[in-house]
Length: 238
Image (cartoon, rainbow, N blue to C red; front, side, top):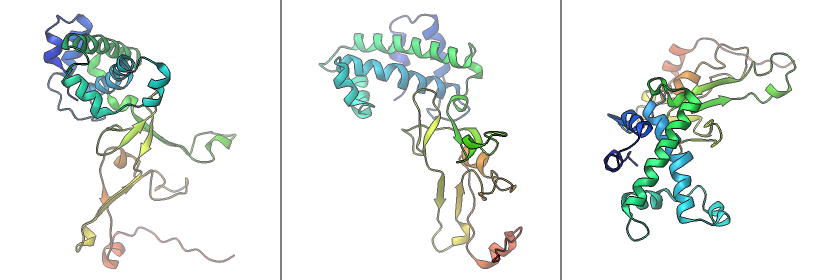
């Protein structure tokens, strides 16, 4: 869904709505971690516009609970083509009021200056070590993150999040791109690193690369593996 600036401008938006529309000016509709527009869009859509739509067309709270998180295609159709279920004026009023609420929500979360809003400041991934909550000294020392992350539950690089704080709770921790027939040209990424040992420098060495959506070589041939090997770990019986 694209911000409906044409719809909004018909109704003489208030100051907060005008400021919100300026955030969307020139946006490429990508949910990049460094994007202010992505921040406003996700907060507006998920926390304000989408719930308002559900409340409008499923006023019974019990029924509404069963419909969550809602059929996105159907909700977008209701917005783009109001049809017989409601009129364009009602649609426009809902979009404007929820846009204003979404902008205020972003102000509360990230400050009053949209120029410094970043989607990755809300949408972050934390990799918590299994023993971190049991550690009496330096709890959380083996955790990695939180890492800024682009995307959402609706993007190709799925990155679902908790509605309460936008913390990432679903997505691919491992990604592979295989070049069949030229295997050494393949790439991959996993997070947080190449080692499961917190004492190793490779424990979190891929975390930043993963959060930026980048890759490292996935080597296959013995020759390439030997050329890239830094050290060997030898396991011996006690």
